[in-house]
Image (cartoon, rainbow, N blue to C red; front, top):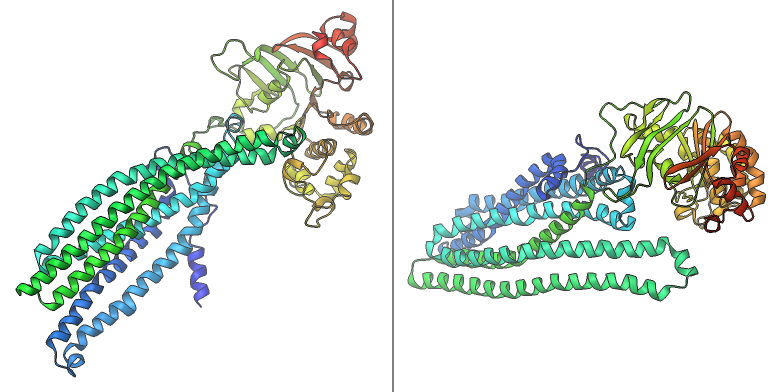
Length: 618
């Protein structure tokens, strides 16, 4: 029965829901409100329940005073006869009201809010971040971004719930205490008022410092995490270059920065607690002294004394708890503010409001006076006034030294970046006028830097076409000459063949094997436009020859742009385009360019073993 109740609260909210406005706002208050506003009903109920529980707790010293008064004024044997109704009312508050309020609050907090809110914040933050431009990820550590997405969920949840648990609870409790003590003797409010004044000053001074140092601590933690993850991601480079000591220093520097930030934060805590100990000692002594003086002078009875002193003790105990929770809240504020600056960045690569999915019928690709530079304002462009028209079904080979703009042209067609001047059109449609997903779905890419997901081979192969059957998947693998390799795979969990996981970025496969899986993936995707960016660079000549026929079949009926330093792999293309500093310097067939004796012919003559000797060619 109780499990059904818990299930009800567990399912109050979905952790993978999306807000109507998908852009988290900047500004701490707006950023936090964006997420907790999706749980406003649950938080409103919590506020009411915590207030009830706080009032019930504040009544405990009153009950103690009432019992002491009964004992002082009632003869033995008559207490239950004379005070039955009062005692039953106390039992009702202690046994029913208080436990029920806190039980319902626990169910809403622990089951309705905490797991759902934490993961919803992470999910919505990730949903937004994953749609950031490629540049966004190029300019940061993946581990740093991931750390901010993961930590912000807990930071907001803890900060908001602790505010209700502590600040709101304490406010209600103090109000009840002030009302009760004022009725006993207004003089008792003097030490409490002085204590509250100094407590507020302490709170006002320390909490902003805690928030600021926590933000610094969060940033240093993210940097440390980023460097550690960067080391793990590039472990092969670290091992092969034998740079263990250098890498140790690189990570150790971030650890030292983190420790320095941590120490500054802990110093604030030490001063804060030292001051609070003195304030609390003064509060308890002064309230007790005044209460006993009042009893001694006849202005207070035993019941009043028994009420006042426990209130002072409860406030003293609560003050440390509130300060500890308050400091935790402001630590979460610092963490949230630090994460917000990364997560809530506006998306820069957006579909236009009326963007429609592109349906490529012909596959014509046109670069119309395109200019682009990675750094705006810097003199010189990577691509400058570039014009190229690729006819439907035409196979184009791009040739040029590194940095001539070949891969940039591909990335612009995929709209990884937006052109700064000119336009790129597919079948007459500007790529900026169609949806990005449909655009990239219409282009099959095999790049030089092949990266596989740390999932099964099956998931990697079907990534471009989820609806493909296993038979179609295996046929593509056979065409890419990688089926036998896949059938021999076994991962540490015992999964075999197409179910085996390939490791982060496909690390469990060799470079050539990863490249063949990538080729099979594009074969299976079967997009109308095909981009081969050094697609066979990681393959040895024997394997390349084995799959060259399949690549030729893959290119049939498709518009193809191929980039290769090994000119023999693109010599049979319909047209070769030679680039230099973002401009076309030659174009024609392989035979025409050799006959011209120009730039291409010089590159061809300088090749050694089929690769370009670019420096010698210059």
